[in-house]
Every structure is written in C-alpha cells, then in structure tokens.
Image (cartoon, rainbow, N blue to C red; front, top):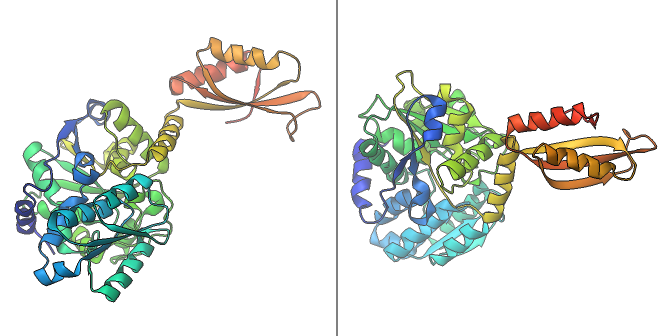
Amino acid sequence: MIGPADVRAAAELLQGVAERTPVQRSRALSELVGADVWLKCENLQRAGSFKIRGAYTRMARLTDEEKARGVVAASAGNHAQGVALAARLLGLDAAIFMPVDAALPKLAATRGYGAHVEQVGTSVDEALVAAHAHADLTGAVLIHPFDHPDVDAGQGTVALEVLEQVPDVGTIVVPVGGGGLAAGIAAALDERPDVRVVGVQAARAAAYPASLAAGRPTAAPELRTMADGIAVGTPGAVPFEVLASHHVPVRTVSEEDLSRALLLVAERAKLVVEPSGAAAVAALMADPRGVVGDDGRPVVCVLSGGNIDPLVLLRVVRHGLASAGRYLQLHVVVEDTPGALAELLQEVAAMGGNVMHVSHLRTGGDLGFSDVAIDLQIETKGPDHCATVLAGLRAAGYRLADG
C-alpha cells in the first residue's frame, strides 16, 4: 500500500522533471452538471501524458547496478514514451515492447527519445509477456506501467497539484486502465477523505467493475475500444488493492460516449486529447448524477493523455459528430425518373442540409421495378435540425427507411 507520504516524496523527486500542468474550467460541462467542472490537462504534460511521473519516479530509485543493466517496458504508447524520456534524462538504455497496431506517432516519439522499440502482440498484455521474457534474458529491469508502488506514487502527484489548484474540489474523475493513476490519486487523498475519486473505464475494455465485485483482479471479457491507452486486460495487484481498500467506484462509458467527449473537449476547451484521455469527461456527460456529489462541490476531470494519431482523430471526430446528431444517414426510395435525384438534393439543400455523400442503388429486396434507392450522408446542425430535415422530406412525400 502507498500513502500520502509516498506521493509527497515522489513529488520532490519530480521537481524539474514533470510539468505542473494547468487546470482549465469548462463552462460547457459546468452548465451541464450544475457544478464547477475543471479539466486537469495532463495531455500537456511532457511526452503527452501523466506517465512520465510514474516512470521517472520508479527509474530514479533504481540502484546503480540496476541502472547499468538498463530497463524494459511494455506499452501501447504513453508509458512507452514516459519510460523512453525518463531513460534519456537518467542516461539509461531502454527497450520498449509495443503492440503491432500501436499508433505511429507514439512509435515515432518513443524511438525519438532514444529507446529501442519492438512491436509484438495485439495488446499491452501480450507485449508485457515479451517484456518479461526480455528482462529474464538480459537482466534489464522491468518498468511496469502500473503494478509497482513507486510508479503509482509518481502518478499520484497529479492529486497534489489538483488540491493546490482547486482547493475546494469535491470529486476527481480519473481514466482507468491498469489502475495506477487512480490508485496514486486515491492514496494521495488519504488525508482528504472529503474528496471522492471516481474511476472510468471503456465498457469494451472493463476489467475493474467485475474485479472489484469479485474481490480479486479478473480479466476483462474483451479489449475492443478506441481508447487504447486504457485497454488493459487485467488490473495490477498493487493498484487493485488500493482502489478496493479505498472503495473507489469504477464506471464504464461507451464508444459513443468517448467520441462525444473528445469532440466536446476539442470544440469547447480547444484541447486535443486521445480517447482514453477523454474518459473522465465522457462519464460526466453520460451520467453526471453518478459523478457530482450531493454537495455540488467542484469536479476535476483528468485529461490523462493527448497522444492521438491524426488518422484516429479524424475517425473519432466523425464518429463523435454522428453520435452528437451532426450527421444524418438517409435511405430514400424514389421513382427512377430523370431529375429525381436532383429534386431530392434540392429539398435537402432548401432545409439547410449539406450533402456529404450520395450512393445510388438500383437493386434490392425493398425496391420495385421502377424504383431506385438513394443513400445520403448529410451534415446537419444538430439533433433538432436532423428532425427538421426528416419531417420535411416525409411531408414532401419521400419514402424513408425506418431509423
């Protein structure tokens, strides 16, 4: 177990290494939940996430003999960059094992810090097996991404900054993968029992809810989420003990929740985060009642990372726009006559819809001999505008597929 003294010691060690990241009040989220909501911007941390805090704390405390053997780690990207940067600062050799589908910017950044990178497996858990084997073979010290007291104490320094920046904070909402960040924050708050910690996992990579219910670390049934930074199969023993003993609740959010949150943070807060970094905001947007305390005190959402592949960002933004009702998909059946498509497009344009994509289908089970189906993707101004377009087309006599 770790406690406030361990976190304070880590904070001293990190002076001049980790940035004191800013907090930013979100008016949009504050109005949504009826309490002040602040964003703790660890996406602006060195190497793009909170991971440098734990990696450096662990590695700086190695003995000289251990440092001479070098270090090894496994990560989807953020821990990899934290270890690689810490190794460069400390003058250590670092080998990093990353999944084969790791984001290209994370791979490039990790290599850019001077680490040797190998890609293996399809998940962090599989990469971790390879890292253990490398450690056994070479004697390199394994720097686990979350299952070590020093790592978790380093991550917990986020909480010390939050207490100074938002002194009346009532709840800190934290993305959870292996659990190191949430555990460190919970441990740091031992002397502040009035401050709640709420963990958040992606529903399609959620090991903690079942693990906490069972009283022991339990593997997640699936790992299929856009939030690769928190896609961890099994909780770590060290963070699990902390979260269980502190009775930290862990909620889950859908892929739609994550994409909507990422879009809101980008549009309203002007901040770029990765899907896992938006998990805390996603939980607040999905159901604020489970997050905001009865006293209405401020809520701090930790934006845990900002390392996102631009191609993934493009896909997530599109997904977020669709989830927010900004895209409308239509399947319209019309008579196959000259000018029918042009008339349909004119109707949509007259109602302010911007047609992004058109597809013509002349065969199908729902089509008569003289019918043609037209699939449209329309950019709208939101759910109300979607309803207006649908009502207008139906009033004009168009046959729309259900949904």
